[in-house]
Length: 88
Figure 1 (cartoon, rainbow, N blue to C red):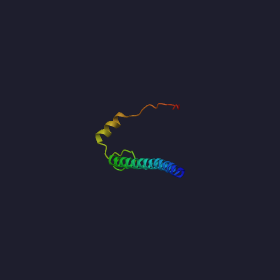
Figure 2 (spheres, helix red, strand yellow):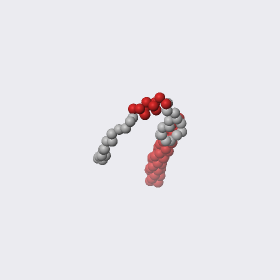
Figure 3 (spheres, rainbow, N blue to C red):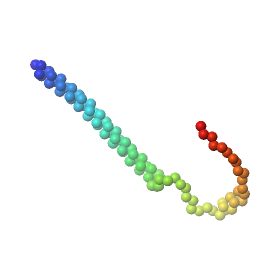
Figure 4 (tube, rainbow, N blue to C red):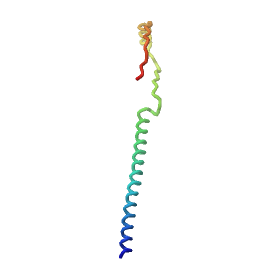
């Protein structure tokens, strides 16, 4: 009778430990899968929005002559303002 009791106790303990390890393993793998899927989705959205370019520079191909003439008349020089950068 003692052997059967020990056997059942050990079997229950091992099955409980195995179930906890299995839950931990499955949760970690599911989390990795969800993170990977989110990364792929974000990359796809970024490619669609940005056209695949990674930089944020602005390229101007054409400036109208009217704007250039108007701008050159308005800006004739300026005052230099001396400033000091304050760091916190």
